[in-house]
Length: 324
Image 1: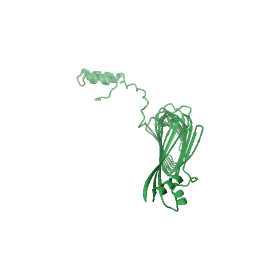
Image 2: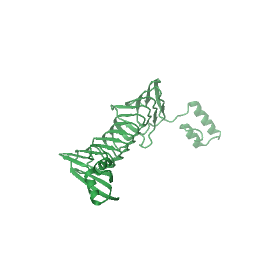
Image 3: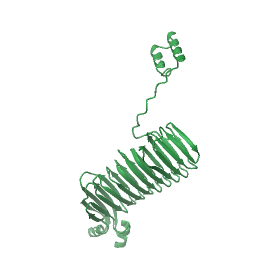
Image 4: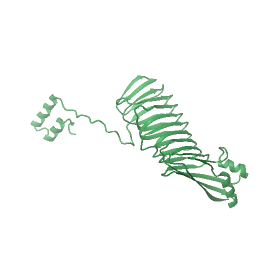
């Protein structure tokens, strides 16, 4: 058998805030926000077939089914959720094979609902309301904005954003990583996956995190209070903090307290650290530790006896350590 390439191009004006739905059961998906009112989808099929005609027949059987309406576009694989391989097997007695790759270019503020099975998904530059559901594939959102609903089974999820975002995330067996200057709200749950955050948390926002055995690690900007509920949960913070309460219900208070994060877990741990990727909020300048009067007299005595220089005496009187 030879390999034949067939391309399906779809274009529809959905408007700047239109709605786009994409569903694939096999094939990687790349989505990018671009200016303009049009949504454009390009599906590329690499088809293994015995002839050009058979490749054309397979292409007609497996190409995306498209439905359009005012401000809406839907594109999904045929077969009621069956994989491309099953469709080909059913229609062509097991002959032939097709691999799918999807590229989509959408208005940045468009609403998106994407469902993928056995698909790695990457999206960038989108700002509208977005819903992603993936099974057996990784989900990666870059330059993301807006409100995000994420559901992943057997795949990792990562989100990076240059602006404030709201996130609702569920993961069965994959990790979730979110980096943003600010989270307006977060509801996240995993079974065995870890959750890694780096952000400032908005005052008044709702923040709830639950795991069965997954850990929470957060590079925190600003202040927060963590309500921690877990019998086998270890708590650690490299940022100055107060820890209150008993072992199964503790409060970890950072800074002025800030918004409250509720963390519940069977055995997951909590780590609060300084941010690694985002610029740290300027910390309050700490006043130098000026020596007390008795120590000042001792510094002057050392200067008078020639045991230290004028520069060294000045440094110590200003609060610097000896020999600094």
